[in-house]
Length: 130
Image 1 (cartoon, rainbow, N blue to C red):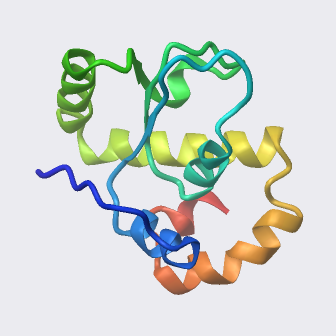
Image 2 (cartoon, helix red, strand yellow):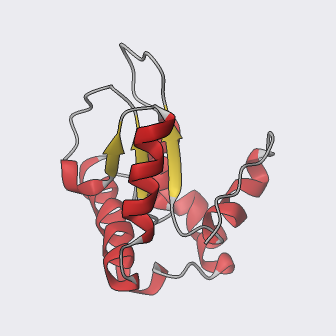
């Protein structure tokens, strides 16, 4: 019902914010190379991801809602996301988590480090996606 923007947040506080979020946002302008490292964190948070970027990453299109990084396109994408039912939103989050686990081996070292934090935060989809 509301979009929250915040100033800089300490890394230690991010997982609590992810746990409290219905979806997570990546905004990129004029990116030619690279891969946003926060995208894997977002996938591991089991939340739908709204990707506002012109970059063409080698990821399945159905993993996130994608739009151009303009105010008009971002507004359309947010409305599309907000129109989804809770089951579809949960499936998007689970799909991103499972994709990261299967394709980026995030269930190994990375997940062993953050798994206790995720469980302690009682993530909405955590029980269905392990």
